[in-house]
Length: 220
Image (cartoon, rainbow, N blue to C red):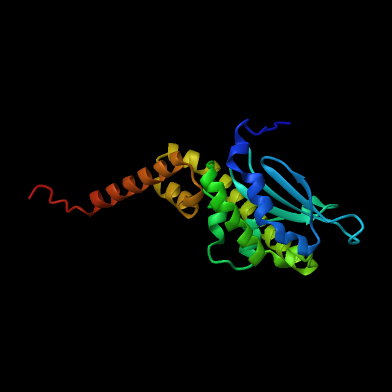
């Protein structure tokens, strides 16, 4: 298993201190500090507090410097929910900014950590409240949303695989219309090389159309 250890200077970013200072509100939902490390802070419910224990993790990823929040029941990791999905579930207008590699909660500087940890705490406080209260309906609803999204993604990947499989012989046969028909509906998922082939196929089709449209006067 690959493990990323935080660099020796990560403590200088002040992540742990920023989390402890901004996530104190978790106490009112029954969470107590369980671990506090340079890039990872975990809150849990005392074993005697509730029939089912929950946790809340706040982290600064060691490889990509992404700030994140996740929560769920201690006895079922599959029910874990994270901040981007919570925001999407809650209908937050800018939720998509917190998905993917260019998340709005990514920083490798002390100034960024000090600015973004409070922002993340604000988002959690405002939109994650049903999950902090351990609302089973909220968990069921969000997990259903994630399952639907995963199913849709898998279906899209299946269509992409089929398109790639069919596009190779079409490209070799210079069947540019077929290449366009296969690739164009999936353009957002294509590699740069496939996009280049799609552009070239369109160019070839346009050239053929232009040639066919030119009047042929012949020998008058």
